[in-house]
Amino acid sequence: MSRFQGKTAIVTGGASGIGKATSLRLASEGASVVIADINAESGQTVVDQITADGGKAIFVSLNVTSEDAWNAAVATTVETFGGLDLLVNNAGIGDARSIEDTTIEVWDKTIAVTQTSVFLGLKASSAALKASGNGSVVNISSIYGLVGGSAAGPAYQAAKGAVRLLTKNAALWWVESGVRVNSVHPGFIDTPILEGAPREALAATVPMKRLGKPEEIASMVTYLLSDEASFITGAEFAVDGGFTA
Ligand code: NAD
Image 1 (cartoon, rainbow, N blue to C red):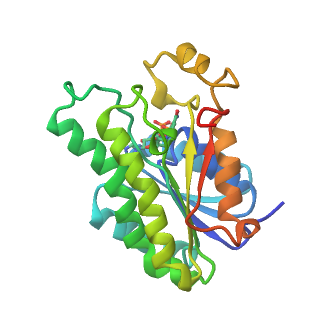
Image 2 (cartoon, rainbow, N blue to C red):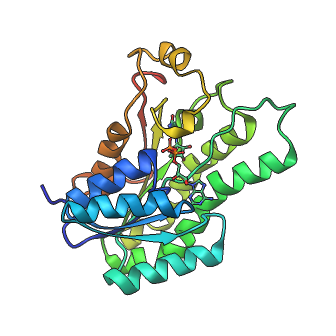
């Protein structure tokens, strides 16, 4: 299958977990992929894997909280691959502190990396995505962008809720330009972000009684990015083993 032949994608946080699985899947279906991350070593490993499999990818150093870095990343993408069609705003950091334990520094950092990053990504990519004529964006929120939960800290919960509505806002602003924007809400997925978390206890709270795999999120993300989802915009999709059912 080559649903993404001739298309170019930026995946933030593409060096690990859900972003990595999504990057590999996009490349395997023909996309040129820009792995945009702060972790150059892991990002380059993903690029090497894609290249070894015959795909096209580059690593771009991007701190998603920096508007200048975003503008540079989009410029490099357009220079290298001739345009930008697909954007996955995936980078984020977890936080499970209580309200009392959340310092203003933790609040500001979590909001910057997990929420402001999505706004900056949309803004920096706007012209290129519109020029594509068939642009598609997926913002990675969380089950905690849909329902409350004490396994999430206040800043993470607020940020993921904001990503859900920012998605709908962008979808409506951009509907006439042909750029679709949707959000995906993963449940507990077995990635490094769960390091230190009680994985077995989390899995026990899921109706399917297991953690999800990053590839199971990548399936939904790539569906929404593809032309198969041509009538879907401003919508939210939980991929969570029944957690929010
Ligand atoms: P992960 O820790 O495996 O990957 C996150 C990636 O983001 C890493 O490569 C990291 O280097 C990168 N990153 C962190 N800060 C960055 C920054 N400032 N600029 C650029 N890149 C940065 O985590 P994951 O589980 O793959 O998480 C991906 C997304 O999925 C996150 O937004 C997370 O909140 C969301 N999510 C994850 C789960 C889960 O259970 N794994 C559940 C719901 C939502």
